[in-house]
Image 1 (cartoon, rainbow, N blue to C red):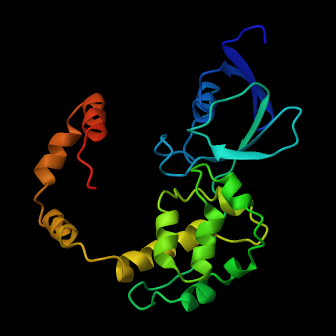
Image 2 (cartoon, rainbow, N blue to C red; image 1 turned 120 degrees about the vertical axis):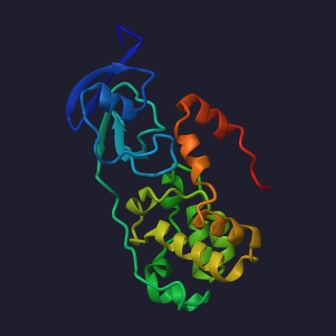
Length: 226
């Protein structure tokens, strides 16, 4: 490259020169794209910006979150509005934390061939195949713990030859765990009721009036329950 501060990328086949320090999402905006969908938190939490790319001269098709991944020279990039997931409808108050519920709602998990493509694709470095194995056995607490940091981006499912909707399976496991298996959290129930009663409305309004830098500082130094 003649200029080490710029790289060449291709967005949907069109060539652009962009600063090398940008993320894919920032590079798209730099190139003039107005992002109205497929973007959200911009910090790797919402999973909305799942993206496909490859590098010139390499056959491997890669996946990532556009807000977390920096551009590379000769990167060919394409985004989708969403990665398809199958979401079954159920009433959490009537289903039970039994292995049979997974067999009924997500029977495709038993077609897993153990290729581990889901785990390799995960931008959160989760052991996706492992939490699917827990779901198969009805070990919902283990599945919930293993999948806790899932951001529902769907990248794992896009690479699955068995058509498993891994994030939805994990979400069901976490709901079953929270509803039936996890110990009761009385202080959480009390806090929810306080919110419903409007106890924190003034505090929230005051927080919303603060500058963004101060909000970030408060967030980064918040007290986190063990």
